[in-house]
Image (tube, rainbow over all chains, first blue to last red; front, side, top):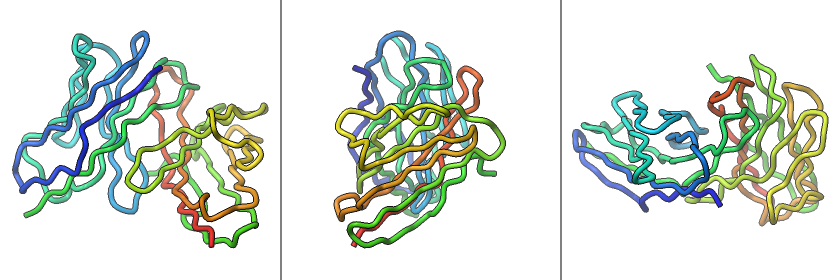
Length: 114
Length: 116
């Protein structure tokens, strides 16, 4: 079945450090891939997405590239800020139709200190 | 602004009572909405797919008689936790997306349910 595996956390970094959160997936066909972020006490927000191989999603300094050959969608940011502290979820959707749910990874907690 | 509204954000109830959680799409029609459950420090687990005008589709292991889902209109789905028990305490999140292909899912802010 379809699944998402992301690196275990927590990830603890100092401000301005480089961030990588690994995400790999298993899916049939050509899934769309997403990163969502959940700030403390809040709901989920879409951070970025990619819908086909070699697409790069980017937002707020975060980037992730859809790598079909390695079935990966690693999240990166060159210089993290304290305000980036949150839980990050990698997710996939198997089909492009509107009525398909997301499958989530377990989430990675990022803690950034000043 | 928010495109999916979920209410209430927090609810505390006694064992044996029922609790209804509402999920509304604010500026679009959603024939399909999804209900997730999130345990502490864990991922979101899909509970069921709510289909407007028809029965919900439940994931394996989710009790349909305990978690009643009604999707009576194109902008509203409700999840009712019946005869709640302390083990039902959790964070419940709904989501919906626009009809267009590749449209991302938008999430409500979630409901923190505590059963005492």
